[in-house]
Length: 609
View 1 (cartoon, helix red, strand yellow):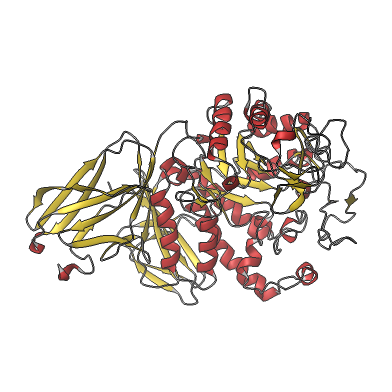
View 2 (tube, one colour):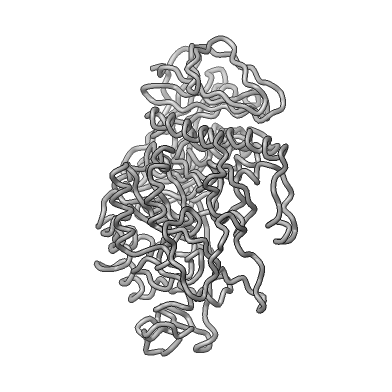
């Protein structure tokens, strides 16, 4: 067996997911001169003992032996497996997503149920994330006890107050009517869904300190404004997804009422409060469980029956907002919500609207996520439809700022293999969010200043910005043409800069946009809508022979899309074995294709079936 130490003579179909009830065929081709006697696949469910399955021998053609087996797995869950070929072990290569001799790293197999309908409105679409206070202001409401910025283009407040706390009570005036008036702008970007950061009543500008789950915050408008937004957006083929913050509330809320603002009897006011069992008090009333130590954010016990009924019941929060026009929820800090709560919430939402979507905020690989010592069940069929794809973001940035293509290929290949197809096809592919450095700043390579004052004052130099824009175009191409659904953070397409919160949450630069970038994003959006391949086409990473060049294909029965991303400082040449046309220019390309430094090519041809 020593002559196969690089797997030259073995071909193995790595399987990463299968639907419960469908036989899974493992199939391996081996050169006959290796004289292999037995092949086993060793499978174990997460936390359980290994079970060996012997593959059956068959002869395909002269010089090739095939060993295969159908495996029927009887319960949904996370499984692991590896191969044993006679006395040799074949496992996963952690440098490239492929089988390798001698590796004891196991392949992962997600066995999922298909319980709910796929949210098809997201397949092949484009999500646009909006931080409502900062997008567009139409007749803004001036509220007491908050600071309204007089300059729309000003810097968000970041300095602590006299008590040393950042209270997030500065507002720019963006609202739902403002979004309504920019729907045509979004349509021109080919947006098919809007993801709104929280809009429920709350007293901060970010609204993650919910005060009233049932009503739109007055600074953003009214419930009727929300219904109008959903109606008008729907006429343009745009759906609206809400941010659901169910791991905690605000201390200044109807439910806790620490500040005594509300006539309700909050949990802080009396143990007889109907909301008392939502919270955990260590020493009543001032010592209580909080979200990450913030006293203004008392943590909720999602196992409280009354809280579950309030959120998931027939007339609960989830169903109410779906009835008002929402197309689903993105669940804030999903890894802090119990599986049973997510399952119940999903069931309630899907009962109200079968194709509604439930996204989870998960920063790691969601297929094998462990949080608080519990293996999560996000993708087993009864919880999340999909997640925010932060691993993609990190891998793209690393590659474009000096990393190797192999690292990016591994990350993408792992997710493609481990996520169920339905989850993969609507995976929220983001480059920026309200919690991250803006992508243009991240790609500039600029060092993050150590203090907030310097971060607030920082602007990219002309050279930094020009270089970052070139890289951003490469990132955007991958964002739009890798498996999943791109999620464009408001203003990225206009060239907005900024370090992390609060500088990534500045007001949209209307009238000061980078029109070149906007035109590029419009073209990307148009290309995405024109190619069905981007809905569910297969992904395959290809070898480039250059660590600064990432090549991959998206393939379906209609066409092959070839993407070459050159992040290096020298041009790259590749041989083509078929005739292609350039997706951006329409130019015919064959023979040798040359990709300039820090540039890309997106080529298409008919499927080779």
